[in-house]
Length: 172
Image (cartoon, rainbow, N blue to C red; front, side):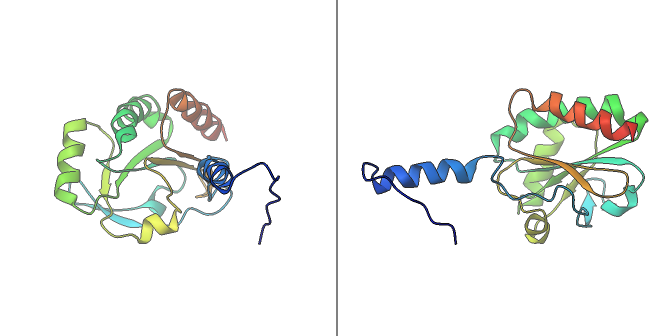
């Protein structure tokens, strides 16, 4: 157990506020980086079952999203541009909806008009396996199936970071 030494002038609410900020930072979030990506099989938008391990030998970007997560609306078009640019070089982009209502998730995905495969996870096992803390969450898996990068949320500049990581992994 970690102990926190509190100076006499700090109130309990101030300490809790600081701890909540630390707990919400990207650096403090649990990560699978350096570990094998947990395998999964999910039904895709076109009805086919896709298994993550089927893409061994390629660099895979997996984006966990939800229609209720505003950042997903911004990130999905950026990922579609990345997919269009790098798929011939060996990149596979997979979007994984974690919405419980797959019908509404499908409608949302159709409205976003992305060209990469959209998969539907209506349970919680995969989210638990990937330690999802915030939506959206994006991970990059190398050709050997190892998670090499993860990002929670989406903000300006993240697309550039994804591209830098993808280029490095494609060169390996």
